[in-house]
Amino acid sequence: LMGVRSTKHGVHRGMSSVTIPPPACMLRPLEVPFRYLFGPGPSNVPPRILAAGGRPIIGHMHSEMFGIMNDIKKGIQYAFQTSNNMTLAMSGSGHTAMECAVFNIVEPGESVLVAINGIWGERVAEIAERMGAKVHTLFKTPGGHFTNAEIEQALAKHKPVLFFLTHGESSAGLVHPMDGVGDICHKYNCLLLVDSVASLGAAPLLMDQQNIDILYTGSQKALNAPPGTAPVSFSERACHKMFNRKTKPVSYLLDMTHLSNYWGNDGKPERIYHHTGPVSGFFALRESLAILAEMGLENSWSHHTEIAEYLWKGLEDLGLKLPSVTTIAIPEGYDWKELLAYIMKHHRIEFTGGLGPSVGMVLRIGLMGYNCNKANAAMALAALEDALKQCRKSKA
Ligand code: PMP
Image (cartoon, rainbow, N blue to C red; front, side, top):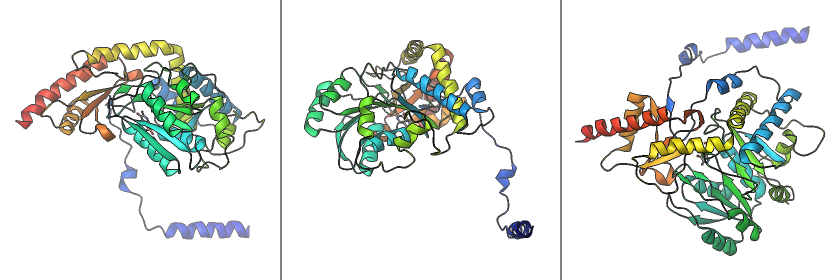
C-alpha cells in the first residue's frame, strides 16, 4: 500500500511538472491527400492490402503469427522462384535487406565487387566500405549494362567473395540481363547478390534457375504493400558462407543467425525473441504476395510489359527498358522540377526526377502492380503532354 501511494504521488508530481504543452498539430486530425503514385515507389496500395494491414494486431511470437510468417516465406519462394529454406522478410525497407546481405556474407577485409550503373551500386559499395570490406567496382554511366565477359574479367582480377548487380535499376530505368552471371560467379567461387526491389513481379527473374545466391526486394513497388518490409532469400552456398564466419556481423538487428531462428528457418524447435517484427506490415505483405500468387508471376510480368509498351509508344527508344520504372530523357529547354511540380499540382500525380547519377538527366514514371493499367498510362501521358505545353510557355 505504501508503494502504491508513493507511486501515485510520484505520478502526480510528474504531471504537474509538464512544461511542454500538447502541440496544436496533434490536436488536429491526420490529413493525407490522395495522390496517384506514379513514381518509382511507393505505389498506391489497393484496398485489399490496406484492409489486411488494418487487421487487429496479434503478438509477434504468437503461433498464428508464425503461421502467417510461414505463408509469407512460401509467397516469397514463389515470387523469387526459389526453394531456398533461408527465405524471410526483413523488418525494414529495401535498404535493410541490402545491409543484411552485405553484413552477413562479407567479413571485414574481404573483397567485394560491385557493379555500378546507377545509384544502387553506389549505395552497396558504400555499405560494404563502411563494414570494412575491400570494395572494387565495375562502372557504367546510368543506362549502361555489363557484359558477362566484363564481369568475368573483374571476378578473375579481384577474386571477390561477393558480386553485386542490380536487376531493375530504378535510377536508370534499366533491366539487367541475368543469364549466365550466376554461373560465372560460381566459377570464381564468388556469391551473386541481386537487387530486385524495383523489378520483382514486373520483369522475369528466376532465382534458382539463374543461380542467384542472395536476392532481395521491397514491399512498396510492384507488390503494392506499404513500405517497411523487404523479402530476402539466401542459397545453400550463401548460408554456408554466412554461418561459417570467424567474426560476428556488425549488426545485431540484422544478424541472420537470429533472424533465421525468428523465421523458423534454423531447424531449432523453439523460436527465441530477437526483435518485434512489424506485425501489420507482415499482414499486408502476406496479402500482396497472395495477390501475386493468384495472378501468377508470368501474367504479372507480361502485364507490366504490355502496359509499359503502351506508355513507351511515342517515347524515345531507351535500350534495355525496365517495365516497372520508365526513365524519360528531360526534353531540351525544360526545367524538370517545374514539370514535376506542375504535374503534382494540376494532376495529383507523382512522377519523380532522377536519382544519384541520373539526377537532372531523366524523369521517372513508375506503373507497378495495382497502378499498372492502360488508363493510368494514358493519364500519365496526358499529364506529361499537358506539362510540356504549359511549362514551355512559362519559360519563353
Ligand atoms: N534498390 C532499388 C532498385 C530501389 O529502387 C530502391 C528504392 N527506390 C531500393 C533499392 C531501396 O529501397 P528502400 O527505399 O525501400 O530502402
